[in-house]
Image 1: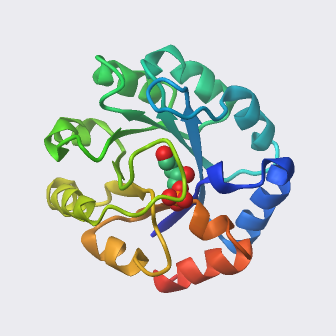
Image 2: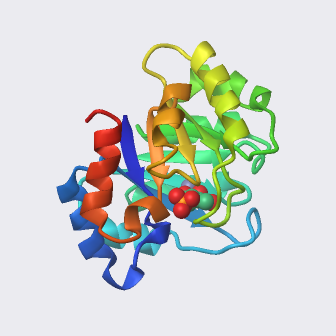
Length: 213
Ligand code: DX5
Ligand code: ZN
């Protein structure tokens, strides 16, 4: 299991310090949500923030692009410090080209889908990508409830995917549903509220413990 805390739930005034706490507690990746106010109703941050936090850590930067036509920004996002880039299948007419651009820079490429998009939409990209992210809430906001019917997508992908392929879930993960989610076949876990609410170090350690790490 790989834990990828989502900094969307962090205190941006002390973001660098909180990243240090995550790293010390043993979190593996950092999940970085880029939203454009078009593909999703919310706006977050992009290159300048990613570049700033790159100085604080060597953790793997797992950048989730919730933007229209991500092909316009993939290179800038990678220049700012992304290690992996995830694009929404609904956000572009050229997913193959997006994956090619990410791989051409030597980075990990992932595709994702909104809850209403059938899993068939991402199946053709399994062999070309390094990971599929199954959205388990409507993208755009932290703190929502986990959509349990998405576990069926996770199971289906795990059945088809080759050995070692990463399947990530994002949205609504808690200490109570984590075991069930990993049992369905997800091995990369994004968590925002569950990590940042209260004691960050304790939360990370508890999540790791539940996953037998
Ligand atoms: C939602 C984002 C998530 C979000 C998860 O659009 O993609 O990464 O931060 O937050 P929680 O874990 O609070 O549901
Ligand atoms: Zn995300």
